[in-house]
Picture 1 (spheres, helix red, strand yellow):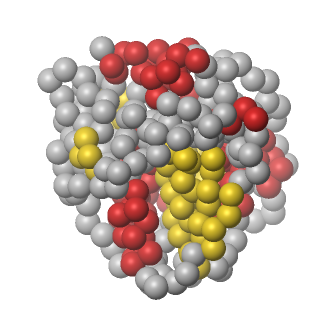
Picture 2 (picture 1 turned 180 degrees about the vertical axis):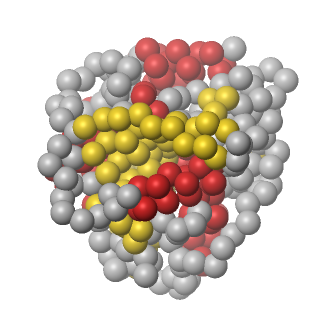
Length: 322
């Protein structure tokens, strides 16, 4: 029942918006481990000369690639990437998750104890998509980035650990890392931005059980967000570095939420950024794409102080792998 309610909220209750869709969209398919996988590629109407930066977008549990890009008629916050495509001459690919054991779409992230996730090789899927776009000369292999929401954010962490070629940076929103993990980490630094609300009723900021469970299935347990931060600080060799903290300018629409950002490391990378949304819920902060009242009632307050996609691009644009 909870899963059906959340699906209804995600698809039907996002506030209507009218962004300028100008990038060129195209759906493609690719064979991965004997399965046909699909993705939507957004390219600039006037592509830059030479390979371009590539951003992989990962929707949440119950979501779709179309929904992430605002193609269902009710744009969600990730669809703020569409105008960035033309403005910044960047490629954006929305990957489509597969149906899981709970009969809803999602990703095979690192949660070993979750029975809702599909048994698909989503790392291989991302690898093959990147290889295709790099191989055709469209994408720059040194400027591959990942952004995911919720289950997609947890999958972003998996891609940071296992993907080849290594992404230069990831952004995970309303997501955490598995307490009981089946991931296999590869030894390379990855810049990471973490965006989480302290009032998230679905994915507890302090860790514990993920609270979206269909009867007969489990969503597993995650560690707290401070533990996620500490993991990546250690992984990127930033232990003991003093972080620089600041607060986003507060907008009246944000209500009782407050977005606080702490940065470790430099733009040249590796870099770790933690955006803690005090009193914030299970939602991407957004200036242009507010969620509806029923979503807020079930998933907590959405912060309105900044546009998550724009902050992600600011974070990504200076990051490169060697």
